[in-house]
Image 1 (spheres, rainbow, N blue to C red):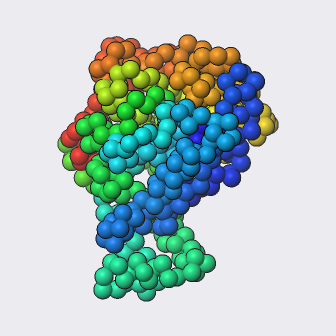
Image 2 (spheres, one colour; image 1 turned 120 degrees about the vertical axis):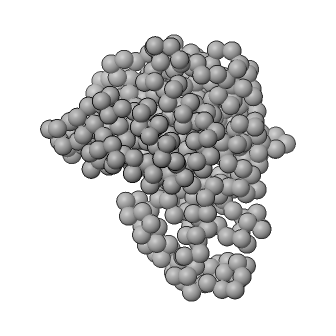
Image 3 (spheres, rainbow, N blue to C red; image 1 turned 45 degrees about the vertical axis):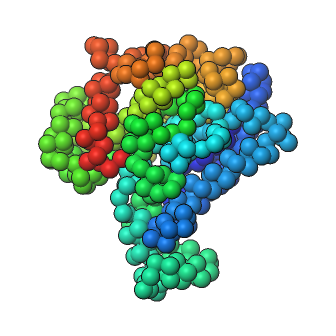
Length: 449
């Protein structure tokens, strides 16, 4: 099992205690499906995703993704020395780590001689989840940063040589300050993967639509029930506020498309929490964000995989429980609920070891089962095979047409179990209709995904 960490392509490293694999590995062994865990670091921010004419000309764009690729090649060459099987490799990741898994699936438009992995797990991310990849955002920010260090020169080649001549100790604090000026909250958004490029030869939506990705890969993908809660503003109080936030996120989205999106998420369908001054418009925007950023990209990935490789397995999940509930309540932020990153403590089986003071008996049980299911999928391609796993997890797709009818496992919470994403009255959270909108060619073109 090869893990790719998240962090907005701006921060992160594999030694974070959140990714301690000890309990994942030991639990898998106890349950009878032992795994070998591999973690990788990769360049992030300016160092991983700078963009310029010269970098493009020398096939040096998306260095962070190329780092990941090198790690996967290393696994193929050396994992047998550790008792591993290079023909049974699972890559998994969360957030942009999951998006990276998706990028590794679409790498080089699928034109590779031999796949570097056989299974893929994407948690809160997929190939079309990275907003801005097809824009010139990284190129603009690279040029601006070059100006800050007096590297604005006559040619792109000269600028790149100038930037490479600056000592890391000098450049790093300037890069961090610049990234925070772009996004004061996290430093995200300044430097991101770039398409078209050698590694990502087209928009990922086009790559999926045309079947240009690695075939015959078993997939498990999903999202957290409130994956968008950390990214929506509680200051949203009206229809126009939500419309403006959509227009800011996607400048290419037409006014009619914005109105169509609002109609799919009527404010009346969401609660008002007046006790903490959070309106239905916040919950509305949070759900929209979850769907266009995490849920619907996952649906698009499975749809494409089922269409191209009908014999493969595809599994959906939605997590509806979090160990962070007590902490959020103490901070007056209970509305964050099952937020982004809520899956990590369970996947790495850390409820007892890292979150023992706030974990309930239900958390401890779910932590062991979810972790075991991840290892079971890595071993067998089935997350419900063997001891200690989440039971009765069915394949998301019936048949091989990759249509709009899917099965999704609700994991944890009061309503756990298999649910339907489809066109019937039992459609889970109206996701078939909502994702048909976000994944339509017209909207994908307007959003640049």
